[in-house]
Length: 197
Image 1 (cartoon, rainbow, N blue to C red):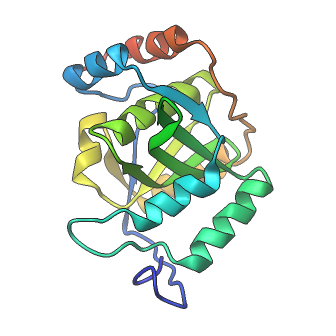
Image 2 (cartoon, helix red, strand yellow):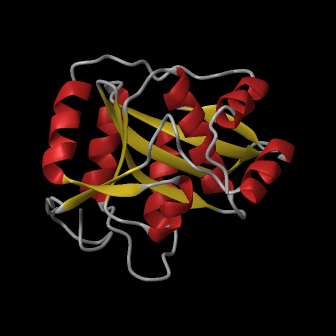
């Protein structure tokens, strides 16, 4: 992480407790899911990765400056070019209005950042991501640090020792980040979870 987008260095942190979103039994607010079902937005993966990370870098955060500087931005674009990163993107017609990106290793997806230019579009991208991870048998969706906004999706903290054991096993399994072209299949994968609030 960088102290700000203008910083010329990055720092490495290890949280005492790891924050993860369960893939097979995640939660979602019923109201959000109903809006997602009726949405007129289009979703794509890896269509404009560099724009997604640039918008994550530039979006104004209420509490503090972004932690994405040019070093992080350029590193993740290079990782994307190597096939190690992915983005989920939400479009209103042809305009990018929401998105997220993360790192993919083994059967793990490490969520890095998200942005919304319209209400709930980053959350819609998270729902889309969860369906992709579930369909493709990913075992970890790592959100790293506690975020109160993600608790509504069933996110929780686990001890580092438990996390590292799970990580070690999950890195041995190869999952593919394959898109799901049929939106009805996305909805079906999300509805098959019993955890709604």
